[in-house]
Image (cartoon, helix red, strand yellow):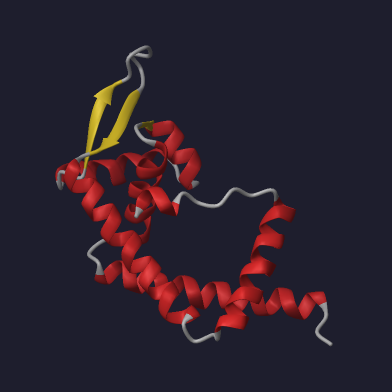
Length: 149
């Protein structure tokens, strides 16, 4: 019987390797994980203040500025004045940004689909049940993948 500590080690190891694989696929789609996360945040939540993006992504204000500068130079995002706070800047996706965000999400989902196709239908059903239970225990809301794709 596997104990909780061994299971935690296995999940952590899986998470590291899975993340590397997904990042590789996102790279093949022409972006970086940080850029893909910022695009996904904008697709899920709509226009956001730079400070909100930084908090959500867990990065410094300087990093958000650098990411937004880069994405804006490529025509993927646009900056707008906040309607009620003249000190704040809103960032929103352009039409091109929506497309690149979707391509990144599709690359992510393709990597995951390939992996889970290695499991039989019963194992996928069992894994889904376990993941739903763990997410409920953590009180987490599923990421808005349906809006991204």
